[in-house]
Image (cartoon, rainbow over all chains, first blue to last red; front, side, top):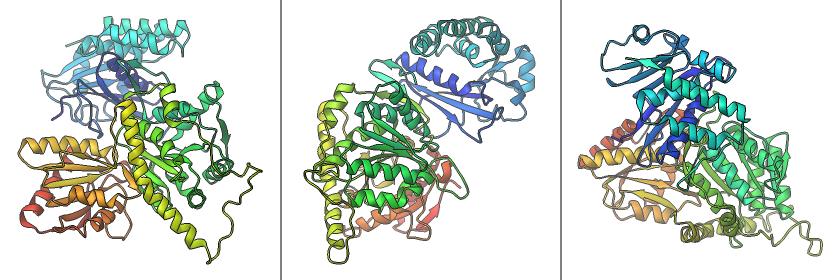
Length: 192
Length: 396
């Protein structure tokens, strides 16, 4: 079958996972890849579980169905674990990145992952974003963490793309805060 | 929305690409009443208007019925007019759709395909535009963000061609295409302007030196003659669609036809399917070809006028065909595309077996395995020459 990198983002409405998927897609496109970034919409209300997806490839992407077995899963809100099936369809070499102050070992147990080939990473993205951006926006540090944990996108690509595409839209302070959040996400993510 | 450029490519959602094409076309008038999932088209286009990036008069109306009414008024006055809608919005435009085409007004409408209520649903199927298939509008369907953008730009030339003078509907899949960021190659503003040219309506209500009446009462002594001319015009538009596509390819290098065939020529079995699901089907075709199965795909781009001769020619040698409709013609003879395609094949010397499969209503996911299951069925039909189930729902 097609050789795509597939990513699934879990969060709650207003936590920015749809934007995160968009920014990741743009950064990969910036690096010369073919991309898809799309949300899954349900009833619109604050705090409702939201999913967003990426496909990334060296070839044009023809699939237009949902992403059902992503290798990479990012969880912006750990309270979703147990409510939403965050591990659904994930393969033996899956990589999970969870926004939580807890260590990866503990999250592995919470996620119910027994396979040793599955990797789990954690970072306190809420705290990082509060300290860098000034409000809780876990998506931005998680992008930095994704670069560190997976390597399919570089931190530089994320930062360059963000500066280039959003400098017109946001004040310099907001750009700086987000770049700092990506950097700290990259540096502070830990896993096993 | 930020437009990300790299190696000549940008990353845009279908809605953003449509809004951007509208910006580049810079229509005279855009009456609109936003509705999910086409909302962002108007939202982003309104930003272009507010920023002074276009000179369009944006008219915010109180309903879709009024939106289409305002389109008709503005087009009758000689303006280049565009709007966008979905689902119930298109349904509410219904009576005005017929007036737009009957008055021969080259209005451009983007329909971001969405299911019709009830039950209420915001996701993709084609029941909205399929319901409008007899309204006299030309209909173009789009597989990707790129094609939606390219179709919209071509639609202007098709609609305004003096041998056509008819409204055009450009359809793309709600959420799947409208809300997904994909790679797209954008044209420059100058390229788009050069391609669409300036619009000078031949007859307009505001030309007081040459007064005309439009949409007047027409009784049995001439109504049918109007309709005959309209029918001839939409039939002729097929050639215009090709002519415009040819010029588009010459200028910008992207080729479009009345339909797209994928590994179709030597195929023995084929799926016929519209819009984004064709991409997923292509992946299934490749999978099955690896196993030696001669599978192929035909994706109609032009549905109105229905290019029945060309489709029959492309499919006449196939053994078995499944037409997958993302809309049901309730209690009709299969889905709308099936019904017409099967009829188109009636006159070929050796008729292929043709079955109807209704899929993906209200946004139900259509996966590679669904396409493969249909091909497996077709394989059996091709081998035995027997059709077990002529029409059924799949993805349920």
